[in-house]
Image (cartoon, rainbow, N blue to C red; front, side, top):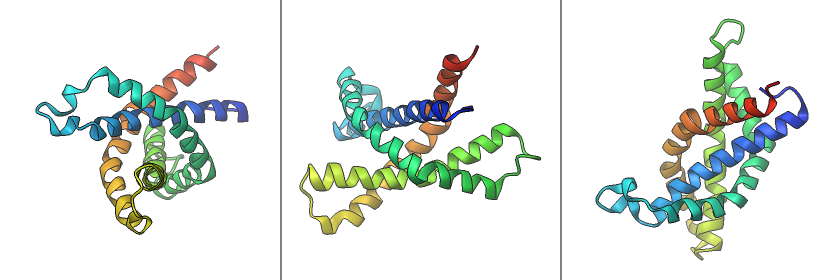
Length: 166
């Protein structure tokens, strides 16, 4: 885990981009209709990964900013309410912090995505934003939760430890 401000920034950037890329792969595959085809996600092509990478380049910036403004703080507050670091398993404590962070970050990033991709780029009426946002949260939350728990966070911890292990 990060021990200095610089390490915290590096850790945050790795996590932000790991989350952004995974979510962009998921949303690009849905947008391109792979979920509607026989075989679903199993029919994805390499185009999905390239397109997702391009979108993740700027979405990662939004993730990093929002997580630093309020996502990480609220995630930590949630964890403090449900676990006791003195008694509970450290891994369980970390999972609860991740769960709390996803519970804040998914609706926050879904609002950013709804405004950017639906209102600004797709020219949908702003009065539909609440419905678009709710639909986006419903679509993204399960993926954000499981992607964070089983891919992005383990990858981030592994990669961070590779960089900072002596």
